[in-house]
Image (cartoon, rainbow, N blue to C red):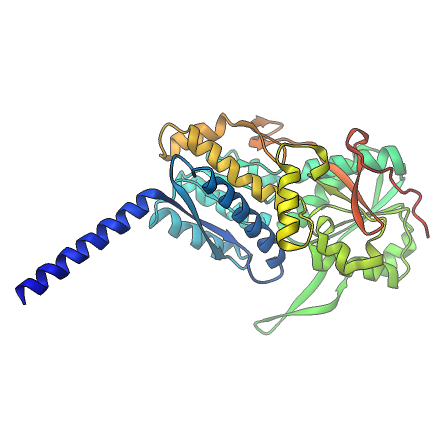
Length: 400
């Protein structure tokens, strides 16, 4: 019996050493994403892109000799759930840097947590202005803020459409409200009168259950009567499709229909809205044709594997993991303050574009990028603005 006990103890110690050695050879990172619910498509797009980057980085030797192991956890796009996932990653797993999430609401919750815990957070997605306007030292955002989406769209409208009036229809989330407010401010600055601004309603509470409407609730008759030059909309994919369907059904005329990125810039929007998506313009952040190093290679790999074109959401997530790699390789140690210093000094070009975190215009640790405008032409997104990046000339006036 003694001999058996000695052998079992020895085997246990060998196993423990093997597990410890394996842990030392890997960098385990938890990534919260909406993998179920209405934002699941965006979560899936981000997950796919992180995985492609992880495979490439690991094939190249990992980060400081450690292979990356990503563990994706479903936040269901609920800020409280996302916060709980990341709190566990910080407290239990001692994760040195956090990243992930999609919506502004979840990103904002994680930004507050990161600042409380003094752990660096790379905001890959989530464009609400407040995230980097809160003076946080440990929060760094690589995606442009919603104000820059608005200014890019208004620049296009002012030069090409020359509208006098606009209405704004938006969803009542952090993203939707920030997008609507920013567009209103930029439009009025450009002399475009905002004649109507309202959130659409997509559901109501019946008892304790959230019941979704078959169509969105907003004042279609008022908007139709106003005959605005521009209808600007901020929504995710499902609602973007529903909005354009209602506009067609109700025959609500406008010189042009404009989306504030997000759902309007998703390949699913074109696929599901079909003809209703044609000639819609939307803000965007990226196109493989711009020529950033690695952009075409990523696009080809994504298309081959998933049989669909990647949007800017995918390129942004893919590049986000490369930013993590760059930062961790430059950091003196993997202690929070050393990683924060490495983030602060980041200056690199990714497949998504240039990444440099700056303090200006009231923002802290914000990456500033030029906003693009795309138009759906023959069922494909084409860059039409700014002119120096344009792949096609804008179709305007749009055919009735």
